[in-house]
Image 1 (tube, rainbow, N blue to C red):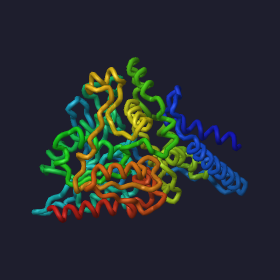
Image 2 (image 1 turned 120 degrees about the horizontal axis):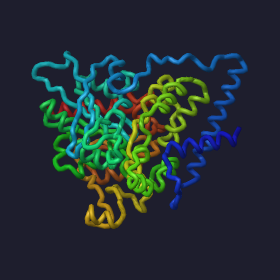
Image 3 (image 1 turned 180 degrees about the vertical axis):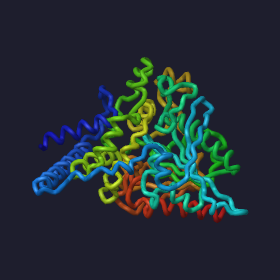
Image 4 (image 1 turned 45 degrees about the horizontal axis):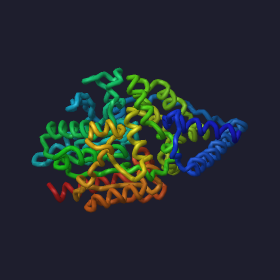
Length: 451
């Protein structure tokens, strides 16, 4: 039994991390990876023991699946939570079509001589706007903001589940997938913000980003002149920007040598290789069915990927809604996007820079053999807040500290829960008390001081 679960755990990590078949130095710290496997092997075996005892006692371990709660897509999820929702298409200046959603303020919020401020919320890697909206309304930040009379807007990066419309290229064309998070920060986010400001007739808005949604904020600040003038306040949750010191051995292993794989896929114009983890039927069936069974073994298996990548925090696990979350995740991304992260993780020093095409192509694109670094200090305004958890495997303390040093006027907030991990910011049971209440209080305080 022990050997079987070791092999299963290894296969899950390798498959989920999209590792290249070619493995080259430098290798990740294997003791971290082995520790992860050992702890999860013990947890899974314990789950099997508990399940076998339940079966022996005649206790039912497969409760009926409540499929009536399982909604797919942002509009359906928001509607199911009892809130109005609007969908808009936004054209970027480089020819892509992305989708943003709005939870409009209620009529009770629309009072004479009172401005209803807009808040733009941006998701992370392999995520979409749906993930923000899937938790219960009494703790998910879009609904909490709406309850406080804010005009809530949810962004979606190109290539994700909600943003796959054909523009210059169709998602079925391999050329569509020639982008990284650089393009999301330079084109998608600015286009979304401009659309919202034009729609609301307001000069600026509040920004909330998680993980990659925080990273693209710094890309925008660095590369899009005037973008910071459109931000009232920014609240960056688990800001994954400087990546060299991440604790996730699974992500380190899975990101080795992705750039050569991308080059081959690009040469072949192979869409199947250029797109990573799209929202597909097998994943839906896994999330909507397998994760619905609340048995020790299925719960451990479904949380395995989350914990190996982002950190483990059993007390924050929402087992009752796990299948809802898994049914809408992952939301897809480009291979080049993951390769760009891999370059940061495996760089010889701690850097945050543009995509490395190799010295020859770099010279053509950047007029330098080495890609230029982003100037993150351009985000350094007094209305910037960085929020991180002590058990986050991706947005680790040293990386956040560097962001703060480069933006000394920013505020740094540590989540009180010492085990808070990367995904607790979205689906943790205590996300309202640990994170969202504080974010909303800061937004309201800023508006009170700056009417």
